[in-house]
Structure formats: structure tokens, C-alpha cells
Length: 235
Image 1 (tube, one colour):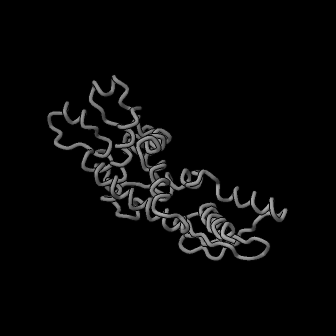
Image 2: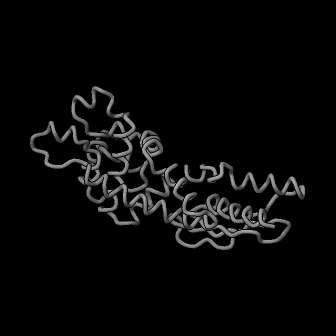
Image 3: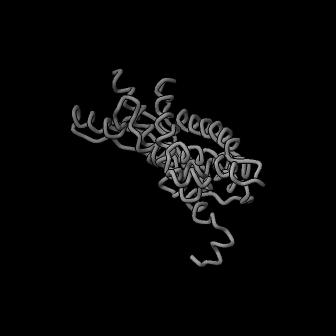
């Protein structure tokens, strides 16, 4: 990358990692401003705490919407457990580390010297602040872009609430009783390429046993497998 590009936009790589480009870069800068930095900067009147509050609420809504759409057979308790596996401090900090957010934080001297750029609480708060800033900058669509880029892949990796992988569990069940594998069929793929919603059927012995919806084929297949498992276990 050219030095001139970095000087013009020091957050270019971070925006690329987020999957969203801010129209007002000052919002992103504020989201990266830790309270310790504000306390040492006499001319700075705000830090990222208000954005963190907003981002926490917006992320909770987006995660809940995703889980309700993709885990139709799950009860409230199971959905809450899944949400905590992606929207609590440690998972958020992990995502923040993966996109290099710590290196971009504006920290006070003492906080920086004490390892603040890698502290889980700081990283999680900053990621929520970035989400809050994105909401102010581009509305819910902006947050959904970030969510799809950063949160959907780990959510797809998370095992079901009872400790199993839905697709793996369905395959194991089918092999055990019928010596065959389940099939998955795309019913529809709606929306532009960057924001598509898939609906997929899970078939066992040629019969439809479950439907699933999600922002990727993998997510929709996992949801369909969960529905199929629920039905098979009641037969």
C-alpha cells in the first residue's frame, strides 16, 4: 500500500476488514478513542463510551434477528445461550484481535503501557463502539454488512445449543439407521450477491424433513439440519 493512501485514510485496512467504508471517518476515529485518551487530551470532550452503549444494543438486535431466522426450532433459552457465545466479551475480543483493532485504539499513555491494546474488555468495547458508529454512519445496512463479514462465519462454526453440530449429527443419524447421507436442496436465493438470503431444504430418503434460512448456504443448511433433527427425534 502506498504511503500517500495511508496518510489520506489511516483506517483503510480496518475498513476493509470490517467490510464497510465510513462516509464520515470522524465517527470511526471516535469509536477507537478510549476514555483514557480523552482524559489526557485537554481539547477532547468525548470518547467511545456512548457509541459502545449504542453498538451493544444494535448488535444484540442483529444477532437476535439472525438466530431467530436460522434456528427456528430453538427455544428462548437456547437462543440466549447462542447469542452469548458470539456477543459477550471474550468472543467480541477474539474478533477484534483478528481484524487488528487493538493496534488502532487511541489509548492514554498509562493504559497503553499496561497492555491496554490487547485487553479483552477494551477490545470488546471498541468493537461495539465501531458497530455503534457504523449504525450512525450508514444505518442498519452498514451494521448488517459488518455482521455478515465478521460475525456470521464464527456463528456458523458454533455448535448447536445441545453441544452438537447439526449437519454432523443429522449425517450420523442417517448413517446409523439407513446407511445414507442427507441431501440439501436450494429452494431460493433472494437478494443481491453481497446480501443474499438462502432457503434450503434438508431431505432424508428423498423426503423433506426441514427448512432453513440464512445469509449463506452453510448457515441455511445448518438451520435446515436442525429442523430435520427435531422432526426425526419425534418420530
